[in-house]
Length: 318
Image (spheres, rainbow, N blue to C red):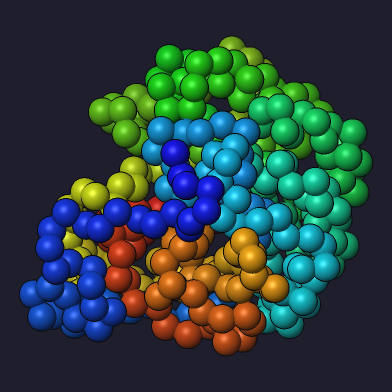
């Protein structure tokens, strides 16, 4: 359990000397960096409080962790103005559980009124259901520009519940079905940690969606995203400038080329911008109070950069 009086800190990598220097790797090679291409997605972290405590939550969300506090509409309006001027198309909301923040419906309205698309990452459990009326009203005004991505770690209840707690699968599936019945655009986020091939995972989800009348194409990698695991204690290779050619990857395809996240830390007077949705606590990824100032190169100096983004090829936005 996260100590309520301290920011969570990622455990150090297992291999000594790795991910220590933003410029060079433990072997003395030039570390890869990612230059900003365009701000395609601006993420708003709604706070780290969550109604459940997952076994492997990368941000250590729980009913007690308020290291990142609830932003208000007033907090995010300057960033929406900056994002509009930069040509950003999408505003994403993540947590914690975003619906724990009572300001979320009003924040969604502010986003949609300005012509952005909105994406909300949710576990679709009780906090979301507490906002049913407000959510329906927002959805009616959204004009197809609101998507809710529901975390459903596996298509089998027992595997999902190992991560999120007994009975959580049934609640999440019921919330997903409610969203579908009420005409929302719904996507699902699963995890690739169960030793099954991607084809078997997608077939399992397809059968689940069909059984419950949920119109999600399980073969669509955006509608059903299968995310790699993130564990900063697991030894992963550092990414050097040579890796782009070796791996056949492009730096502009990595998440920090096209996104930034706004967070509000407990005790802070104002929000700040961080490089990545995955690294809200590490000070080296804090890029300052404005989006303009935050659009600068990011050194891939964390295991998540390697495991999730470069080697995993994953991104939180589509």
